[in-house]
Image (spheres, rainbow, N blue to C red):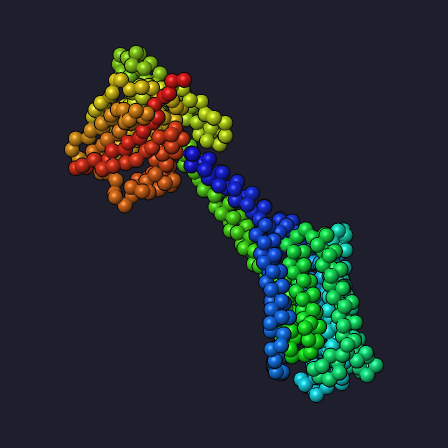
Length: 544
């Protein structure tokens, strides 16, 4: 592929990648469809939760455990931190997507985070023997019920609001006001509930008989509370579509198992089931948080790649412009030089005492020929930007070499370069673009002339054509100039790399691109004791 076309394609790829990298419907968790691998992983988590539940409710149910006072504040802090961060991330997504469902779910997590504070402070034995904040034995358990029932109701609201229209017409200020209003409402609700269960703990149904033992009334509370989670889980199962839905179902399932562990096999605080239930509570809150954090990291990575792509795009555009300018200048420089020399020659023939009309006409004809060639070169450069197939014909490789030598004959004469040719007269034809292949030969010959121009001694340019193998031909352009430094062999074919003082670094890059486009190869070897040999191969024309 020609270098300019390659630069252009790379730029287009970066533009498309930048535009596609920031589409909300493709990368936002609440819209992204779960993959097969994610579904399988979720199923694996469900199986692990069930296996642990069976073990805890079975073989480990009779294992005696003692009270660990440090466990309660650690658990409450973990719930507060995890659910607060989850709520903050969901509020942030709501501010972008303006979804009623996300607002409801965010408030559900905010509710559980806030209730974790009074639940910890009112737990018997933390601040007072029967509960802090002026509460009693019933305060903590009813805060637990309100927290779980409230989250289940918010999860049901999330499911029912999934298909509601987004708040697209609201301004950013209105969205912030909506967030602050709901946060304030949930905060007020938690404060009122805390005051009610602490100041009025004596009027609450007696679920706790003492700081550890639970009464039979607990079963009448556990049933409806678990039922809310079952309803939320079933509704979400029927309407789930996104990764967020998948992980929220896992959260609801973990809550159901947690509630079951508080009643089975022994409804007793500080039992194996009770401790396991608290661990389930931490895990259930972590599912969505970890997924949201992964999404934030992914979106940050997409944003970073988009920014880098935009910068790279600007660099590619600049490089493409430089390449176009250098290619045009490089390719028309030689025909212009030949035309100038032909014009000077024509003037000298006409300036004589007896003008040589025939020689002057021949020089003028060369000007016309070079003018046509320059037009063909410019048209060929334009084809680098086109995707349609370029015109290719069956060509005699030896004739192409002869025509290329004719185009540079004045440079050969000017620098006193002798030409030696070794043509294989039985070469099969090649299929290619005549102007492009002439460009390659003229560039290689001109480079050879330049390489020998400053060297003393004989200056000999050798061109050979031969059959390389059964399906390809090879041309060699050999000089006795200063050669190519070993460190530059891998660099001379790269765009804008040059060893010449006034070089543009595009000639060999263009040559290799043209040969590659024709299905051949171009490379360089040393010509001992001095000089370099440029070889290129072309596929032989196949007769159809």
